[in-house]
Image (cartoon, rainbow, N blue to C red; front, top):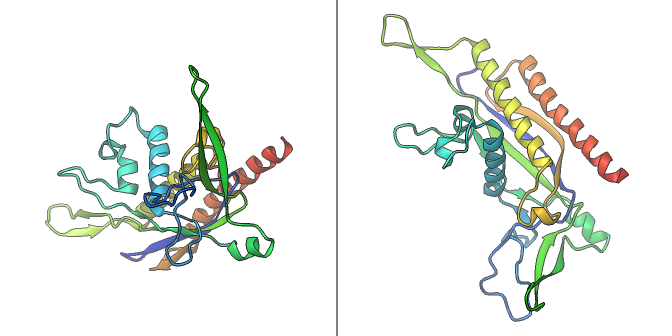
Amino acid sequence: MTMFAKIEISGTMELVTGTHIGGNGAFAAIGAVDSPVIRDARTMEPMIPGSSLKGKLRTLMAKRYNEKPASSPDHDSPELKSLFGSAKKGEVKVGRLLFSDSFLLNGKELSELGIHSTEVKFENTISRLSAVANPRQIERVIRGAKFGLSLIYEPEQKREKESGTEEERELQPEEEEKAILRDFELIKEGLKLLQYDYLGGHGSRGYGKVRFEGLKAEAVVGALRPEIMEQCNHLLRELGGACHETSDKQTEV
C-alpha cells in the first residue's frame, strides 16, 4: 500500500418518498411556496448538500456507537471522531471521509415523461382550541428522483516511533488494511441506518426515505491490494442487498 491513497465510494441515492431539504425562501413572492427546496444555482434542479448527508449520518452513528449521549460532535466516540473529524482543542482531527453535494441524475428522464422533479404538498396545522386552520405549502423532491453519491475516503497514514529512536516508521500494511476495513464497516452501517431513517425535514410524516444502489469503491489515488478493495466492495454490496430487501417489503405493503 502507498503512503497516501484516496478511495472513492460512488453510487446512486434514490428517493423512496418525497424529500424536503429547505432552501432560502426569504424573498419569496406573494403566493409562492412557503418552504422551497434547495436547488443547484446553475441548473435550478434540486440538490442534496453534502453537509446534510454528513450531518445526518454522523447523528445516526453517534446514537449507535457512542456509549452515552454526547453534548457535541467533539465528544463522539474515537471511531467517529477519526472518521468525521473533531475540532476539540488539543485533539483536532481531520476527518477521513469527505462528502460532495449530490446532483439530480434523472432530471431529463423525468422531464421526458412530463413529470416535474418537485411537487408542492399542502398541509394544515389546526388549533385544538379554536379549530382555526393554518395552511402551508411545502415543496419536496418527488419519489423516484435519483442523485449521484460520491464520498472520498482517505486511509489514515499511521506512523509510530522506532524503539529507542526518535525516527518514525510506517505501520505494517496489514495493520493499515485492517483499519480500512473497520472504517468501511462503519460507513456501511451508517448508510444502512439512514435507509431505515430519513433525510431532510418532516421525517415523522413520511418524508425523506432513501435507498442506495450500485455502490462501489475504487482507489482513485495510490494503490491498494485488489483483495482489500474486493472486501470493501463486498461490504458495500451487503448494503445493497439490505436495501433491496427493504424496498421489496414496502412494495408488498
